[in-house]
Image (cartoon, rainbow, N blue to C red):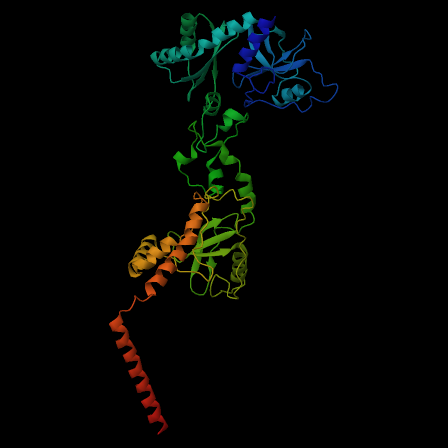
Length: 465
């Protein structure tokens, strides 16, 4: 039994759709997955369960044996002929609402749930799935040999491998009776042909849309509404077939998503056929910004000439003046009042392109006394070099002697620096001392001193006279 449970987990992990049963933690969702919001209500019991098969195919089956089923269990259900393997996708009273949405008539026969899938059932189911791609490629070649104007888009085998459903696309009515005979002889199975549209095929195959996200028809859309080119005209979208077409070569389904908002906003704007008359020219409608309620007018119907953009309120004022026989000088307001245009407010800062860029802080190069002029690196080097050449060599040496000791030097270095000035002072003092005088030189020196005294005395006498 433990091996069977482990095998079930592995098989369900391949196509787990938020079943919370497989342990793969893939958290995927299918396009027809639905949350059972009635699951916590007491008395939420219903005999019929919803079973999902490959991709978009679902069915409703009666749990007549009252099996203890849970969402995500792989079950074997009744088929015609044989049995099929699917996954329980919904239980409870919500299934009744889903049946009503699917427009099932009350008298429709509902098939039964046989049992929970065994390991042998899952083995056979995996073998049948492995043949789907090869069968599709060979069936396309057979249809081309029979010269049938159709395209086989997908093949789905039944759980027991005795039957296969061929999904095809065709623009015209196709007689595929001969094709069914050939396919049954080649693959030795029962053949069922189902015609689908281009949107259904895109939903079954899947892909990435031009917006960069998975296709809506492959993720959450189940009902396809017809899309017309009038929806593009309401939104002022250029009628370019390459831009309007999706992966299915049809008009994009997302064109219908916002068309109701554009239609409601257009009702609050004046008609585009009304021409505005002024004293100088007649203005015709050129373009409209629907949500800003701003309309641009031109003096020529065909080309943009003398374009003027005004608000919708101003347009209504000019229309009323023209009805009364008055013509304003200009379309713009002459009283100087400008319409208030609310700027776009990005509260969270998520629309800025440079929001992840690191801003570099500018370092101020000014000193304490004030801001100095910013000099380039080369200019500063040149100034320092010039200062060095102008200073005498002795000052440079003296500046090197008085330098502060480094952190790695000890106390001995500091002591040597302190004793250096004393040694220099002693040398200077010794240099200033005069040498010993000779005997002959002393008399001459004293004689020179007496002559100086006589000169000073004569100068004093002259001043007194």
